Image (cartoon, rainbow, N blue to C red; front, side, top):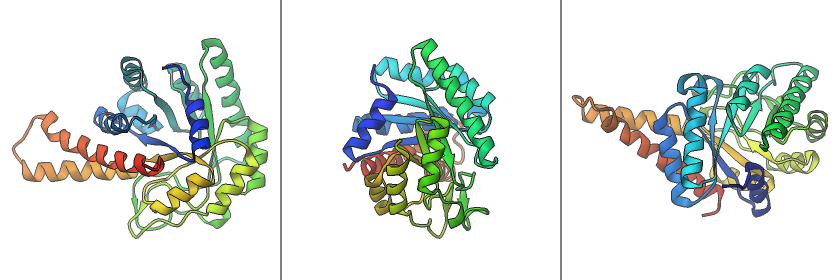
Length: 290
């Protein structure tokens, strides 16, 4: 499998589709996500945040994803999702991740730019040394920081924290990032009463202005129509995490209620794998007009 993640992202942009990015913290989630992608013959990105990485193991998840990619000659890629320091981004890239997101939105803009550019420069240096095409993504604007069920919009998220097209252009030029994750009405997590709507015109304006593919974070709970329109407007990758966490937990709870004496993990966890596969398959079909 020689085609790079960058090539698949560019192809998605041309086709008006988006690559699904799904987070894991255990091997069951990896199985569920990969089963869905393989069934549809679509490229997939596995995301691992700092917390998830600490649980599953940085080297372990690299080995698992690389093994699947090489064994099946399949376009499955690994992304260091929401890493907050240069040191954590460097460690992920050194371990073999295909991409990383430097999340420095809480820092002053100048510090964010300096830190992001440092990650970009290191990725270029490492990529040249190891003959790898490594992608660096950064966020601009604020959409919250927790992938969980919420009662209301996260504190600090408002129209004022949404990304402006001119700011996106300047940020991309100053840092050299490959991908930009803007704030366009999306939030991390999933609001029980329904998520806000996506500002499609802003997505289009940012994509035109900044010149790099856009990534929609906080995809869980977004209306199907907003997904479709946002992808048409310039979103090339969509992140889903909370939805698969909820599916995992609900399936696990239901199985344990119905089988209170079962102790075999492979029996207890199979329904959770199946539930994740179902969610991922539905999302991939939506993102790819299937």
